[in-house]
Image 1 (cartoon, rainbow, N blue to C red):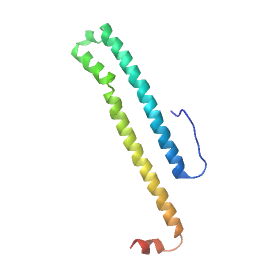
Image 2 (cartoon, rainbow, N blue to C red):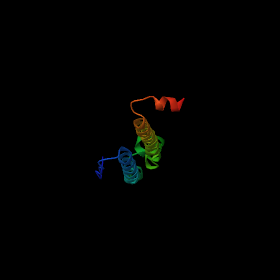
Image 3 (cartoon, rainbow, N blue to C red):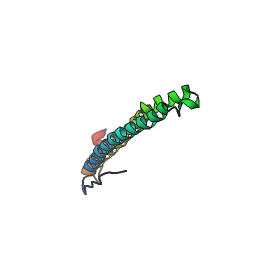
Image 4 (cartoon, rainbow, N blue to C red):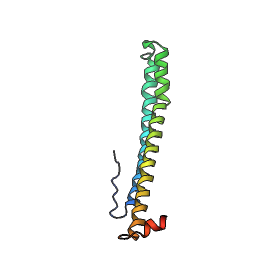
Length: 114
């Protein structure tokens, strides 16, 4: 979900940088809100005895896992690493396109690389 739709018509690298910064902002904002909600909801359920009724230890581990947001940490680490990989790949593709467009039509690029 995009909270801000910021579009820059022009440079692809700048647009990817804007998207990357927006993704980090949205991830941090979503992480804080969901971390607070997980802690609040499962804390109240555990305190009221609802989760204790389901075996005690299992309820405690569910509460501990979700209130500490271990799964959320894992999800966002994977998400940010994947987005960094895509961002670096696009950046390298833009640089390669820019570099190869300087020598379009001949084999100077191949000779320069060899």
